[in-house]
Image 1: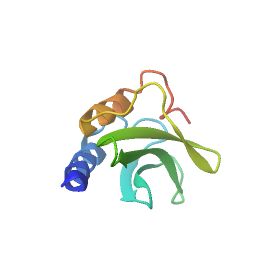
Image 2: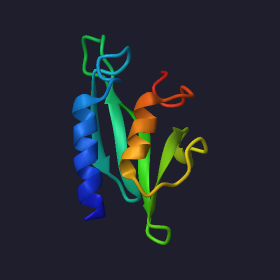
Image 3: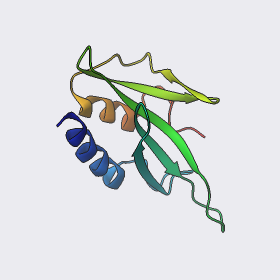
Length: 107
């Protein structure tokens, strides 16, 4: 049920995000990896298909029953310290879309 709600929110975000159409982001997609849900952005402005760029990962912590937001760093991931773990998955999506500190969408 927890993953189902997250899936629904991510599907909606990939269609409605204010980031779609901004420089460097033609479309959004997401997929589960071994730890959580990874959001990716496909760049625009190139005649060839561009590779997807990892934007963020949403990770569920069973012990806390909370979600956290992670940022891509080199070959791994790092916890986003500007928003702590939350019960409400949509709060993380709102934070990511607003990106108040320019952590996620700047290329």
